[in-house]
Length: 103
Image (cartoon, rainbow, N blue to C red; front, side, top):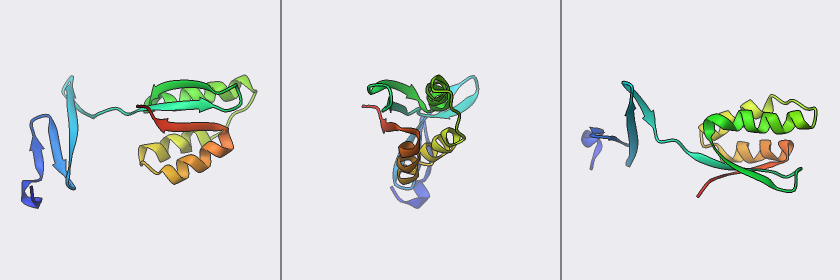
C-alpha cells in the first residue's frame, strides 16, 4: 500500500504503514485496548494485569496503603498513552513499580 491507499478499511485504518484496529461501540470508535502488567515491588512483587484506564486507580490504591499520594501516577498513564517507555520506566523507578505490556 502507498500513501494514497491510506484510509479506512472496514474495521481497520491504514496509516503510517500499519493497520490500526477500530471497534464500533454505541456509535463511537475505539482503538484496541492494551493490557498492562503492573508489579508492586514493595509488596513482594504483587502483580496485576489491567487496561490502561485502570493503571492510575491501581497504583494510587497501592500508594494509599502506604499513606502516600503522587501526581507521578497520572504522568505515568500519560507516558504509557504516548508509548513513551523511557519516561514510563523512569517514573516507575520513583513509584517502585514495574510496568510491561501483558502477553
